[in-house]
Length: 110
Image (cartoon, rainbow, N blue to C red):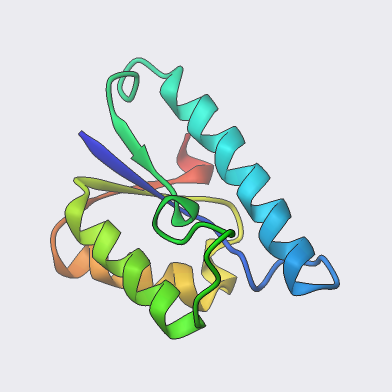
């Protein structure tokens, strides 16, 4: 199974763009580790926005979102982290997942 982690990045509380990105990247790695320990995901390929948009290769928001949606479409399921409803990017990823019949896992449901 391939699982995509959708988490808020630009809508975070940190004051600078770089701080928001770094905090979101740390959160994505914590989620990856947590999900990998769950029996249903332990053999899964877990994908984060930072796998398709490394911080070392800055791109426009449009390019980054396009890559994230493409990653969702290559996955079997999407995990929506807390705060996803307030994120334009997460909502876009969510709607792509719904449209293409992906399994939806919401953080509060775990």
